[in-house]
Figure 1: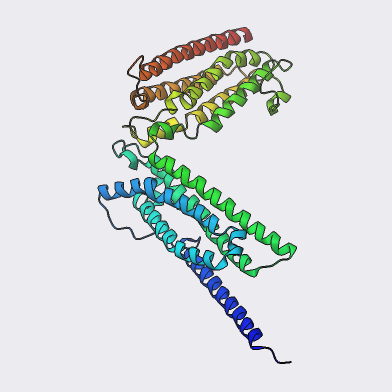
Figure 2 (figure 1 turned 90 degrees about the vertical axis):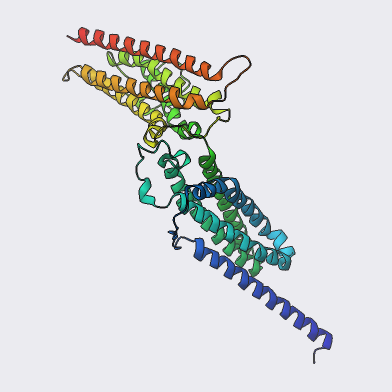
Length: 414
């Protein structure tokens, strides 16, 4: 039976609509494929950057954290909204057109970010070590740029590549219109992967912005927390080792060393070391969590070199290792076949003391002046200087007490 003219017209409309959807799908996939070629893992990231003036470099640096990166975060939110499956399937034509209109702006901003990144961090090899003569380079010190080099040339591009890749896959699955259980699972999985990639990109953006516009006071304390936690765990370890049956806030973890609790005389040394562990933890807590890091500093940069900044940034890690190595020395100090390691302990103690003495000087000279000062009732800067002076007095007293205990134990072994 021949089809009616109306039926033929409807069939042609459906075919034309399907052809239009396929063309839009192809165009969308082509655009995302083009972005993947430009910003994907195989893209050539070393751009030919012409020499620019310091003023131009600073302008790109500032626009990176004030304009380009915040805009990228906003654009990723828009992309997530445009590729929301239920909304896309309700209005595929309008959503496709909006995405096609949106992608050139995203591409343009990514190019700006790439250009600015390679302007301020031109060569990866330059940032393998920290300089000791860049104290006057302000925001372009290697200490800051080394971190940005990794975030903006490696971490962020990787996450953006994942966003583009999962967007590409999600579009294919949306246009497949599979109503099977497996098809819905694949669509849901692609959507989740896209959202996860956008979340990771947003975190990388936020971290990059914080390192672009953060003060050196904020930057040196940025990575302290994990090592502060390790010092706290070490304190719990020592307290349990000294008194295995007593209460301890860290007892939940039951550190490995608790299986072999200390014996005299190393237990006496560990007890004498406990005030130093507590004072170390207090020092980092005060400067990391206190008012020193709650108020916006008056200036971004100091006249410290990158090596000095790195010294402060790694202080909790180094102090933690000093303390752990001291504990390990104590654990072997009671062995009959070994002489009491007083010389080794004394050297370790001197190294430990010098780390804090050097850090205190740098904080006093360069970082405390960055803290906004109260002009009404009291000086915040004076408060921190007095606090550090009191802390160092207690620290020296704990060092002296430990040295006396060590000599007493050594004499008793003779």
